[in-house]
Image (cartoon, rainbow, N blue to C red; front, side, top):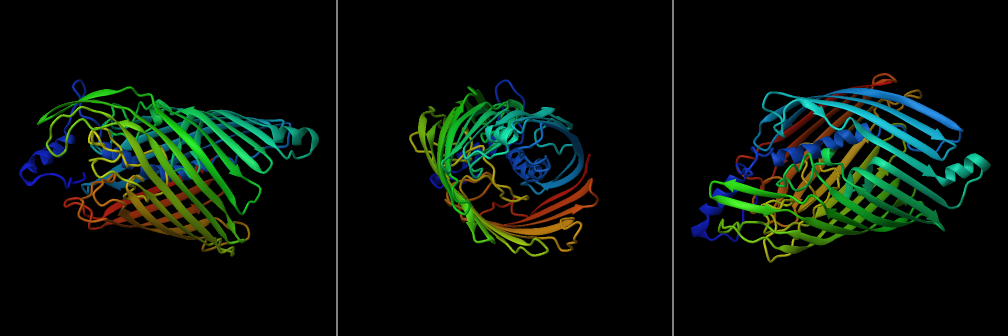
Length: 497
């Protein structure tokens, strides 16, 4: 947790006792809460693995036949070894089976459904949420319908329309812009209008309660009952594939309506929860010649949220107030494609987000923004790659990533049968006095560095093997007792049918 500079010397022991008591805080009518930090970190780490699995679904392109039915599935066996903040290694064995069906009619109507049977098997005492071994719900995790006007016209006339209208409705995975503001499963309606070299996209949706891990880990049932609604629009220029600027507005409304009393050794703290936010972004993506791709996005966050229910300097209960949110985040990336026989590429990415120096935790209400102050911490349900071993959230983070990947043994028949790569990260704090989603001190900005390795081996046309290893090397901002190297290891084999 962040050490607060404003604490007076004679009062230093009281907030320290309070911060230590946060881990033991109990609601008045519930048992001990899950390991909030570890569960949020696990969610961030597994997202990178799950991204690869999500891309194994057939590409979402219109068909020209009258009707086409595609059915299939896969089963994946994975092994995880993950170091937590204390240096303990937690072991997870995961069996992940999927069955899907996709029906295309007239090149315009697409129906997709997927069942997912995922079972988590932890070593004794290693579960992050305290619920142990279990099936992960829901079983039906994707089902949507899509209409494509251009596909319908092409199927009937063989001609391509200059304009288009698409609509997708149902439970689906939504990535908004670069993913900084929203990258999550949702029950949503997505609309896209295209005309005169411009595209206008719109979204209206709500998060699935049982499969969304909220950014506020102190909220009751934050990992199994999250209700946040989203509405937004995005305008993009599509007339030049080498230069595609866009701007968007995205509104998030908190519909959780929660209350919780934190009982600690030094007092009880009744706490209400509410966090409404809006995100306004500008971005661009495109190409610089045949070998360089680029992307950039900057986001300004506004809104209002409830303040903390205690004063970190004194440990006293305080009245919660609704305070303004003024935060920012940004992303800048470039990819160089060698276009050689090995499909070699180098990727660079910078990610930054603002932090709030009077918070104890960056995304939470209990231990959050202080009454009478503007909340500067960037929080969202977005996702970007911040490594495997540390996996911090964007709030108050400066992250630099450089990735090299190649296929070392290409062949004419199977050019992608083996692919290897390595990523290097450097992590720092945007505000030295503000917290990260992992514990740090306010003595330094430098959080540390990380090296991630990956191997993807297509053993046969149906069987593939994936290996991931991440090593985080702590910097001077990591507190004593949590400054040992952290490891992340994953091995998985997938059979597709």
